[in-house]
Amino acid sequence: MLTLRLALRNVLGTGIRAWLNALIISLALVVATWNQGLVSGMDEQAAQAAQAIEFGGGQYWQEKYDPFDPLTLDEAHAPLPPALQALVDDGRAAAVLVLQGSIYPRGRMRSILLKGIDPGQPILDFPTAKITADGGELPALIGGRFAKAVGLARGDSVTLRWREPGGAFNAQDAAVAHVMSTTVASIDSNQLWLPLAKLQEMARLPGEATLVVLARGTPPPAAPPGWTFRDADYLLRDLRELVKAKSYGRTIFLVIFLSLGMLAIFDTQVLAIFRRRREIGTLVALGFTRGQVIRLFTLEGALYGVLAVILGALYGLPLLWLQARAGFPVPAGTEDMGISIGERIYPAYSAGLILGIVLVSLLVTTVVSLLPTRRIARLKPTDALRGRMS
Amino acid sequence: MADDKLIRAENLVKIFPMGSSQVTALSQVTLSFQTGEFAGLVGPSGSGKTTFLNIVGTLDAPSSGSAFVLGREVESLSHREAAGLRNRSIGFIFQTFNLLPVYTAYENVEFPLLLLKTPAAQRRKMVMDALDWVGLADRARSRPPQLSGGESQRVAIARAMVKRPPLLLADEPTANLDAENSHHILQTMEKLNRQLATSFLFATHDEKVIGYLRRKITLVDGRVTRDENCRPRGAEGTEPC
Image (cartoon, rainbow over all chains, first blue to last red):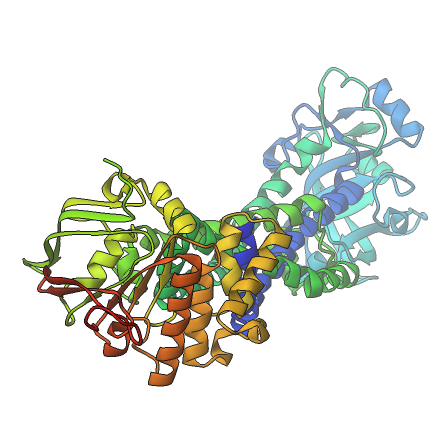
């Protein structure tokens, strides 16, 4: 208790220098929290967007379906089993038929995926209602990025070509009924959404689907034979790996930033031991053991961490709260890097995150403060009293 | 071996390594001091005065020989035991005052009592008594930079005597003071010695200090060349130091 009191007095006694050190460390803390909060927010948002727009509460895949191998698509479809059909009829699932095809925008061929979905489906949160067939031209829904890439706009016509089960190619014009703006790149890039019934008819696959998306919150029934159930964790695995990979980069940035703060403490400690040699000698002469002196200096260093936490809380918490509410604008092109997020990221700060960063920095501060005090152990009190280093 | 003497040094030798050679700071010094002495080690710089003080103050250990302080053998003390002995029984007064810079005069004097875990009410009384003794009760809230050299040294004396140690070691206590302050300090110390029976051992080559001593031990090149009782200023009897 005495040592703590002395340490506090010594730290506060250094005046502006103490607060400058604390400010530097607090900046590292606040930026670190913000940074990690951003990654958490991105992770949460991306997962939510992907679930709302693409994965739902899990998917039943026809057993030959492999999203990473387009060559399997010709055979990756089957009639809906009664159990899945019942879910679709109840509005608790949506069937999707995925086929390979090509389009010819401006006379150039482009390989794409043709995806059929019921325009009235209530499961996935994207504007499928825009492709309600009205007996006229075949309506198609495309994503904004793809539209931009191939130079298509709402109202444009484009020729589609696909292969029928017998192997013959067929073709038809489709009209772009809507260009959707979506945060989920995987329902946008190189694909055209068509009414399910029309695609089934075009491909001569009545009642067949490649996958069935389950509504969120619906308990998944056992997968029927020939179908495999993929839960949300499985479907989000790649996304989470991607976020994790990005967070490694941010962690390195965080370590560098935190190191700068720690360097300030280390430097202060080394300087303090050098400048306060006589004081160290006096403390020993008055009855302090070397261990107590080491504890005093370590505590002084650690107190910079505590001051930084207090200072950081004073200005950091309101800033982080504001940022969490207002969000952080996503730089253009971020979605092309594979992360599906909205136009703004809303950082997510959990108590665990804040507590974790605070504890880690207090621990690191203490260790960094302890390192220079090894010199005290080598310091002879008689030399220290004369202001000399041993 | 413990005994009833305040300090007993036998064949004390202290050798310091100096690069590739060695310097002998104390050579076969045998001395003893009784309770209540007002004694001084005198001699030129490098004669071993401070080294002797450091050893009996348990801040250093002899290379050979033995030193007993308050019945405890210095070499046999662990760091913790030596710190405890200094804390309870030995007061130090330094040439450069060595006040803790961020504390007030009151807090500087209070410090040894905090280490001794003295209860707060008793602590406050002891601190104010000590400051009263040195005539600085009104400067209790001043910090070291606000004190003159003489005042700083008086605070250092108050800090050394606040726990009423049997032994006070003073290393060149007047070296940084003018004549008037030196006499003031020395009179305070003499009063302490007389009224509280605190033993004083000085290391000095200041004639002003020597004038107050009742025993003068002359050291030259780490050897005791003279050990004499003498008459302090204003007293009658033996020869003055």
